[in-house]
Length: 442
Image (cartoon, rainbow, N blue to C red; front, side, top):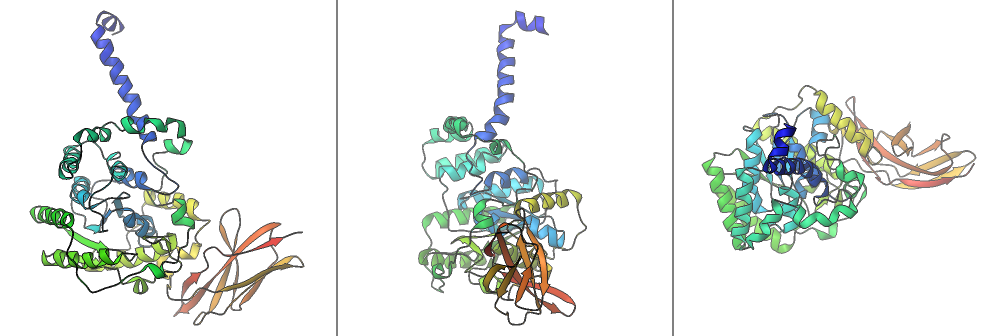
């Protein structure tokens, strides 16, 4: 073979190009646009393609509102059901049809739950979030062509979605070890810092109205095209609107859109005014105006998977799966500093049992005494201390104070969760996610 290569220069060139492509393609994935401290789009899309054929039901499609609200691993941990998100930040209406096509390549019979947000045309960064991790196919080519012809974009700009190095080559100087991790073993579960640690009160940002306003032309065209596609392919699909902050214009236009989707014979689960029914606390369960944090995600996931399962006769409580168990255990290692163990079993949650208001944490004579206000209908309280970035249960009491003598020198962080006995089943309520701190000096 070497002799042949020496005698045939063109073969040497071809071999060199093949080797170069073989090296560039995997390395290129490391420099694609991503910010894993604030977003999980790359994991969402890449991990979907690793799932076995016809193993998921349902599949959720949408933008970051999809994967910050709904957590497949939380649903699996409680119910054993294997679902997934095919979602990326900034996914707009123009992408919905092509996303459905991608899902159908491997999940032919799954119910599709399409999370609608008032986004129509995606910006270039949002396109990268999705297209950079979508395998090359006729569908991907059609998506790129559809985007750059519909929006009268410069077709030359589409080249960067075939060769991302054209735009993103300058990232070489910013690469870290995390950029080369293409699979963290959590099936794409959301784990960025905002989702895990931020708490935002959005109560003043909520708007509700029965008014209907005319939809923008882009919405009419793109949603009509999508519903025509669904008609043609006899799609099993449910549309979903999450409870979050919408502007007056967005909310009233979405009212018209819901009417239109219903008039075409498709089901809409409109949760925009259902935060209280779901159990979401709009003062604690969001990380910004449009996204739930991990605590809100747990409550939303439980509500939605039960509604979807009931409407579409989808079985819950499946047998355990070793692959998914491993993924959840990996995920728990990432989130254990931000959630309590009892919070993760959604069957035992009481989202309407108030959080104990933490009054004080005082260190004296070798122990820390934590005090809190009594919660109506609570039968008791669990006390947790954060230790090695994990919430560890240190006490169970019916009183409204607890003394911990196992505290360590330095800053100790505590929180308290209420619970009640529901005919022999313990149900856990809410708690202060950030806790209360006290300095211990021995």
